[in-house]
Length: 178
Ligand code: FES
Ligand code: FES
Image 1: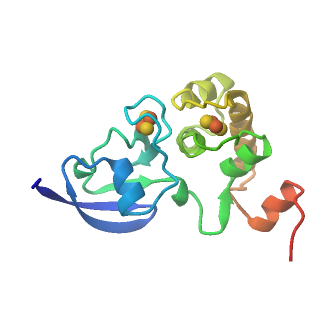
Image 2: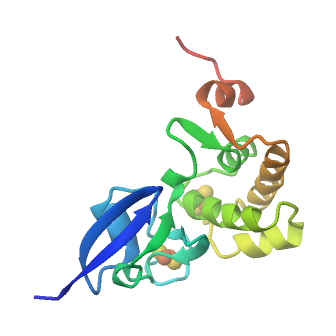
């Protein structure tokens, strides 16, 4: 039986103590041990970028990262970018611009966009394209993603970080039920 490693991880602002085999990948720890299924696995070999999460604020392919090597690390997935019940400005901008098609690449795209915007609140179009190129979108929505990041920057510059459901519905002109 393979040796287990004790690992302390902080994921989406909550602390976990885990015992994992040395071969366990972060994508599996997040999805199957901790239930963060917003993390998607596409290729499983570092090419598609759909599995990207933030580890100590750096974008990281969770399919190529061993959990046992992350003792003491802080991890953020798409579930951790807002308080419960809210959407982040980047998520709202992605919806508004129509960038979310099938949605499979969206969590990875948004985590990469967040890492970029956290570093540079005034990215050029070329910088946005360069960062987003680390995630493959089979629906081909790259231009929409670029527009979405620009829009998210506008929100964030105005201090609009989180939106509640009513605000999102109003923005999208959706009928408010009940
Ligand atoms: S699933 Fe990790 S890069 Fe494709
Ligand atoms: S929206 Fe479908 S893969 Fe990107």
